[in-house]
Length: 182
Image (cartoon, rainbow, N blue to C red):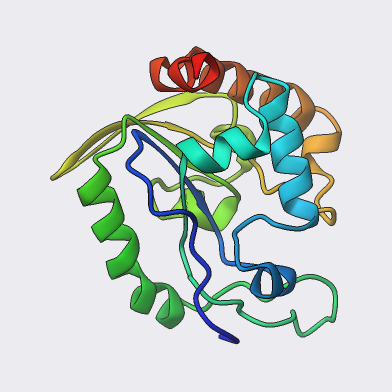
């Protein structure tokens, strides 16, 4: 892991968005989803009534790992954090989930989704509202694909339609509706 931890604004929210880990630019800008993936993500959320500024003020943003993992060995994209790195950071995510007790969890990308449920393909989880129960949590889980510029999954079918379904599910959430009204 490279650099200092990057975290979202410390706000009390019933919605939590969980990404994989910060990218290289997030370290410079000191906020999660601050570059290409963020531009795509906030375009999605704007399409359902909440722009970036309103989102950042009203939704708690977290990540599986808090520091930039470094470049992928192939040179394209960022390295996926190791199991050990994930384990070391898990106490922070668990604490946030326990403290916030969110009604809606939005994991973004395969790594974030896999922290909550086992699945084989994004097609199996994106576009569905999944009931998630753990000792201290009883939440809805609405999974999103990673909005990376390298990903093509959400740009073609069935990803395109499943992303639209997932965004519709988020838009119907009572806590999301309260943000729209603010």
